[in-house]
Length: 193
Image 1 (cartoon, helix red, strand yellow):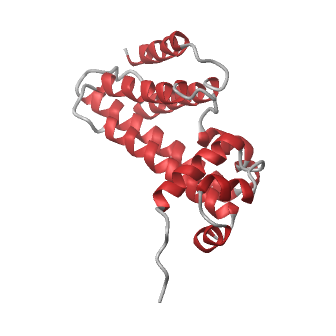
Image 2 (cartoon, one colour; image 1 turned 90 degrees about the vertical axis):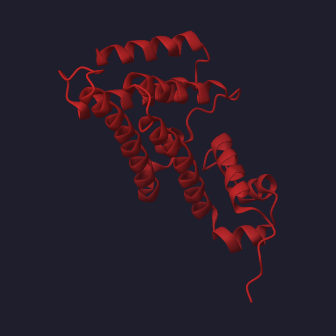
């Protein structure tokens, strides 16, 4: 008979995200994970197998939480420009509220691990595609309603907006000036006219 887990896997994944996000994949040791997650080394190995598997699960957990929120905004009944502003502001606000200025966990994974790890690269690519698709949905809806210019291709605009998100994610590691990010968001939105 399988023994039940003495811990909440959802909470463990949240703690794993925080640990990997703070230290990076390469600098995080198994002992760091045992200490941060509050579970025994044997439970960690029994549940996740190894550090890499836990890292993958942490990335997927992060991806699902952020991706769902962006998708929900894109599909909300608000005007398209408002939805797009909300998506951009959601990105900036989440990063600016981090006092440690860790940047975006997914971008950090893309820079540190993805060049050498196809599994991480696939997760990063899926995240990028999902975010681009959220913008595309909002843009198409806005173009159909006449809220957004149809002079530009919806897919090209979605890629441009995603590029702005990526810039915000990187810049949040070095800047905490909200006005700086407001300028980026306002200028980015001007392409929708």
